[in-house]
Length: 149
Image 1 (tube, rainbow, N blue to C red):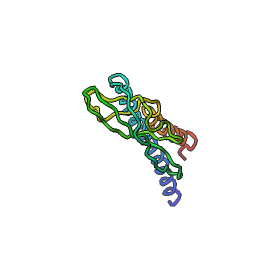
Image 2: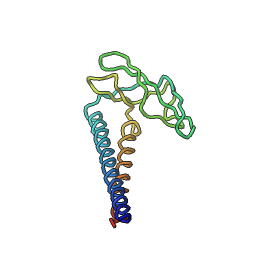
Image 3: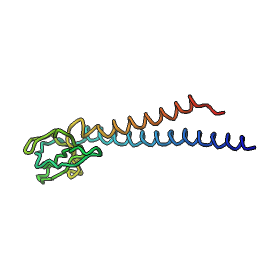
Image 4: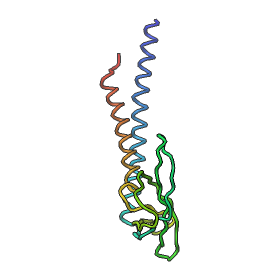
C-alpha cells in the first residue's frame, strides 16, 4: 500500500513538472510574440527622427556592475520636445552625452519613443524567446528521459 502511494506521489510530481514547464514556456513565447509584434509595428509605422543624449544614468546590475542608460531628447513632427529614458542600458556606455542618436516613436504617441538600435528593439524579444524555448525544451526532455514508472 505504501509503495503505491509513493508511486502516485512521484507520478503526480513528474506531471506537475512537465505541465508547469510547458505552461511557463508557452507564456514566455506569448510575451515574445507580443514584444516582437510591437517592435515590428514600430519599425514599419514608426516616425524616425534624431535625438540627443542629455545624460547617462548609472545603475547597478544584479552582479554589482555599473550600467548606463541614456536619457535623450528629441523633437516630434508637431514641434514639441520630448525627453525619454531608454529601455536599454550597457557597459561601456553605447552613447556619449551630446551625441546624436536615431529615435523611433509611434505617430500617435511621440512620448513613447525608443532608440532605433538593435539592442533597444530586439533585446527583450530575444531574451524572452530564449527563456521560453529553454523552459519548453526542459519540459520535453524531462518527459523523454524520465518516463513514468
